[in-house]
Image (cartoon, rainbow, N blue to C red):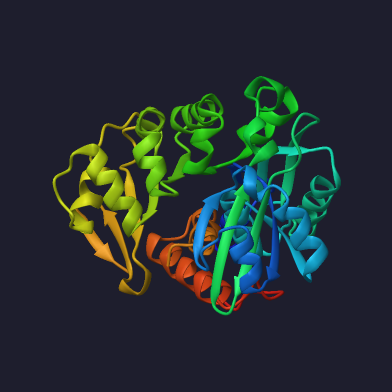
Length: 345
């Protein structure tokens, strides 16, 4: 009998080994253009020092000017792409555990995005089209402030039938065990999200959604609630959770109560109880677990750290710890960038 024991242990170890494409993300790929700018530049385009807005017509020339006038750094951006990039960084080996789908243009910025995804060892499969240029996000930095101006452009053009439905792409979806999509993508392709969410639910895999911003809860409530029955893990921060509660008529402002109520919304796959994870900056993270609510930074970094452990079947405590670790490291770096290797145990 004794000779069988090492074999059993070995088999268990092999099962734990992560396979490529185990984590799937789909969203708005944006090229972050980061630069330290001056007050005149902010004033010229009517920007507040600390803000997040969608680009209007008056901002169109800004993207060209920032490149000509200031020293810029390019980073692969967009909420979901950043989160899977952080997860891949935390995992390190094997490469390409994280897959990413989104839409870009056939242009210089699209080429940079492809190169950046490759450098991050993310298996990015972009739908490339000619109608719109690659989406960009200008991060205008002054001191400790950053004013973000997003021009979705091509990111808005993702088409289920042109990309997700293609056999070779859908095979990558089927390979995954954990799925993560930011609420921002609800404004682009609800039908793509639903196809992925239903696949996860029917195959007892884990589907995660981020509330992303109060405007998603307010103006895309109908789309959000079509996806909610398939959500196994719901992420958000305190302002998003509050907006969600208002729209749902929860009649409470207590974040723990909101988490409990979000957990108990109708759910398709009864084998997994929904978990709500709400971050509140320095206040720690609130997470529903069974009938209890536990308190343990919302950024792409927190979610990325969390997903890196989730895809390895670690405990939720470990997921939260990794989330906080990644957020604390990345908060010290420009854009969503990080040191070469994580120091997380």
